[in-house]
Image 1 (cartoon, rainbow, N blue to C red):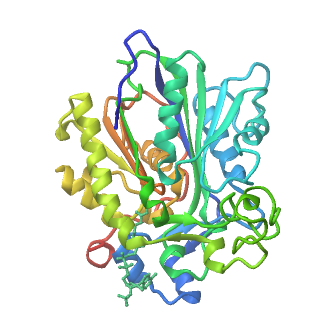
Image 2 (image 1 turned 45 degrees about the horizontal axis):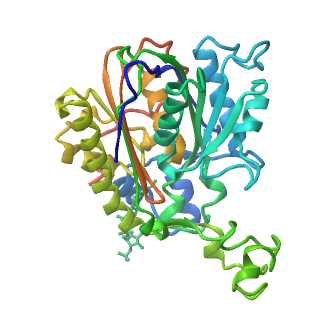
Length: 389
Ligand code: UT7
């Protein structure tokens, strides 16, 4: 569904900083192959992934979000790196978008805001799985256009390593942990950095394609109020799975990869096209396509479908894997750090994820202080076996 752009009088959300952070521990394909029935060649050719970063023991999503948020505030000139903000809060709203919150309740954003020293700001989470960052951008843009917020810190952060079954070779190879953050301020819709047009959509009839089945109100975690509340209406305590013995598959993240793959291709291309049409942009107007980093084959296929040269596709999935809601801001931080995106360049961001959900957004890159590189860069790709088929 194309989203109408706010009227000329309404302030636009303008990007004024970007940053990314990944946990230091690197897991290579070879390391995964030591415990799973897989190998480096299969992973590289089917996904383009060569390594991913994984949270350490006890490291939660908020820990990653705080690091990325602090770096973004610093890049925006709003706070010293490494120390909490002091005095008047430099942003009035913190949005965290994640599929792996620290806990089911409360939201992760208030704790992140508090740890950044952002006193009494509005803080809440947005959940749209891997589309979360684009939904979060639209939410921030709406708050700024409505005059509810003036400066927003938006963080996409995920620790899929905490929900993926380590023995599930199809999913364990894809996902990595990370966080990316942007700061948005009110500004003029025509100035560089202004976000929009948007396209957002969903199709909940396919909710089963990407799912953690247990742990919510439909199917509770082991011992979480078994037999009470929602279960009472259907016969308290009688619903299968409300007790402590949940099947392994229900406790972990599950994805029907093949079907998701097909949806990703069509939905991302359609969303990208809808956004370009709404803005009156031609494909050739796009200098950089920044898709959700799901799988390099998906990114290249969508670029091909749109008629965009693959060189215009920003891709860092080789180094970080699929980092969920963090993937687009991490890719932006990576590209900004390497000066791949330059002031005046026109960007198309397109995401797809569980729900199903999808979304796209356009922006012209502003003058920004480049963030530190979020991770040690990989050596450049070779040809041949490094290239996914
Ligand atoms: O971020 C949200 C959106 N997510 C996505 O967009 C992800 C979309 N899906 C994908 O990226 C791909 O479907 C996967 C990477 C998950 C899987 O790649 P695929 O090329 O679609 O493989 P497949 O599921 O069709 O499986 C092909 C074969 C199967 O074996 P058989 O049945 O042909 O004997 C799998 O069991 O590959 C096997 N396989 C593996 N083999 C070695 C599955 N995972 C692995 C593995 N190593 N890690």
